[in-house]
Length: 150
Image 1: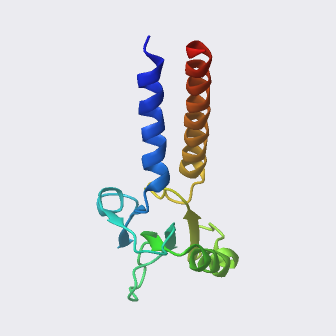
Image 2 (image 1 turned 180 degrees about the vertical axis):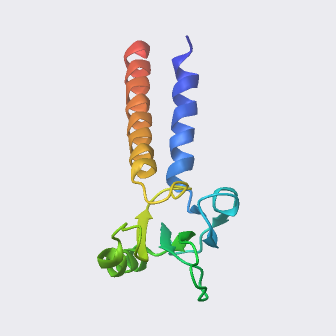
């Protein structure tokens, strides 16, 4: 097995990930659920926007309608980490998940397209785990190649 080619490929992969400044988030505004546009529209974030923000609102239609059914409204966008945390803190007291009340929750995550799911830390944790695993593989391959060449 040619470990040097594998090591070179892994190093190139890690280098490309490390130098990439383009950050992508899913984007949508007031969609009725985490479907369609919220799962299919991606935007490259502006410089300084280093997080993906997801907001979910449970309530009736924006205009008053007697007896209107409550439903989810999902919004996703790029944001600065500081702004994202400020919005999350602002919504925290209203994030009750009580079905008969209107409520709003938000979440921030770091990593490309990490806001695919609504209010979930799994994608960010998975991204971190994959990066850790990739780094460990690179170290292992490089050590193996160095030991086999000496």
